[in-house]
Image (cartoon, rainbow, N blue to C red):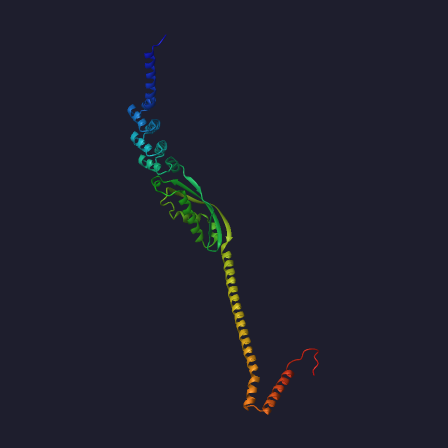
Length: 328
């Protein structure tokens, strides 16, 4: 059987038309929606293609919401959320999970949480199944100076109403660590903390650490407490060493001042001896001048010589003699 060229061209045009039609108009997806009870027109599906919105994502989300009895989920809302950069599947999954768990979560709140960058589905799961967060080791010192190293386990669940703008896990860990340090630091003895570790949990829970966060603290359990260093003794040793260094520095300063004073006195003594030698050198000149002027006679000179000789003799007798010890 032979086909003419016009018939072949017509068949080709029809095939191309059908391919373009089924590409831009998801006919079978429309059939799936109708079979699930979701009313949506082929025109809307075609317009979704033009708006660069994937029809499969929107339709399947509408089917899931319809089967779960969620009346607030509409096509326009889903399209708007997708165009805003949100995750349509996660939002619908979260709404269905929240509905089954009797959690008050509206479509507007779920989309706001999703657009804020948080995983709304994980938040709903955490509301149903609380999460346990292990804190890093926290070091604190009791009043008696003993260091304690504590580890805690914080059980939290998501606070849906504060997920937008609420602080995250890092804030919870920081506040719990601060509370542990404060409670241990106020303990009179480290032994009382070791005997009653639950006292730390009670004091920390009273502080309301989950205020302004995206979580609600259910419990704080002290998992482990280890004894660290005797910080009080270490501080006392450091203080004693510092006092010793200060005393040594002051003693060294006084010794340096004494040495400087001794050097100054020696310099003054040398200066005085130099002046005495200079004065003694001027004595013969003065005596000669006195002889010339007639102020000093020969007898006066001899008497002065005798006195000087007598003085030298007395000095030699008074001084101990060196050598063999024989006296002359």
